View (cartoon, rainbow, N blue to C red):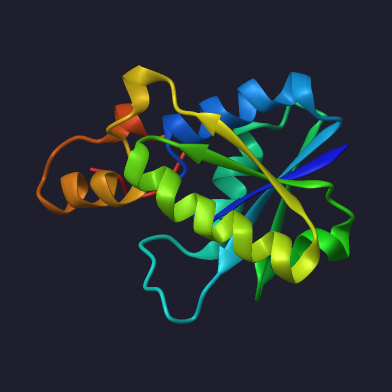
Length: 151
């Protein structure tokens, strides 16, 4: 079965990498889908994010990288993904993700599989990493992949 792991990944963190690595034994393929959202200002271009993530998983044949626009559920159906893969760090994440999962199931019939974040990564988010960088802290240890212009 093909799973789609979607997000803006601005940047792709060590928590994201952990979710993908832990999902690999469960699925035949994991598509890391970078969503383009014209309403969201991103630190790195879609192409920079795509290249950095592709380099990170270049030796893993079960991982592919895609860029998409629009609804994640629509893209998942377009590429034949059987499930949406989501990481959950906290109870507040769960509530948000559950609402998304319910919506995606209602509009497309696609199910969502949740993987709980490993405890050592529970505080890491892309927005936290961007905030550290903007305030002059070295955030490289929280980023998976070679993102340009970090500190």
